[in-house]
Image 1 (cartoon, rainbow, N blue to C red):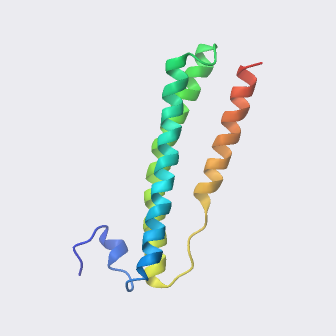
Image 2: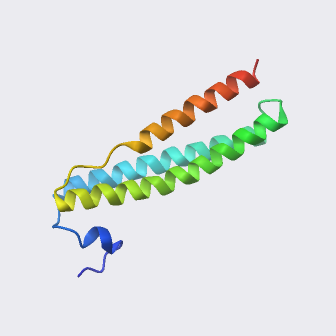
Image 3: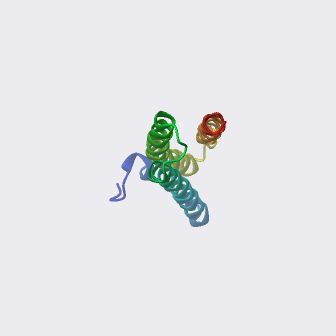
Amino acid sequence: MTDRRPRWVYEAGREPDPRYSLANERTFLAWVRTALAMMAGGVALHALGLPDTDWVRGLLAVLLVALGGAVTLLAMVRWARVERAMRSQQPLPAFSLGYLMTAAVVVGAVVLALAFL
């Protein structure tokens, strides 16, 4: 039994090498920085009035802020799944968060490119 949370992560298996757990935490924090940048980008689009088309600007701003929140949540889930896999000596989970981010950036770039035409 442990006092650390989430228990479903920390009660599984045995303690991994601390370097791996710390690397997993750094990866989580990198995802959070990415999410904050997305949220800041959404706020900046709205505040600066770019692009000129109101509905495109509003849509992109809302999507960027919402995606930033979703990425933060998914980063936490990924951290927990990776930590539990390391503790249980199981294969690491798939890198689905990277695919989501790639798709979001491509869609955002296309929408912005079309808005600036």
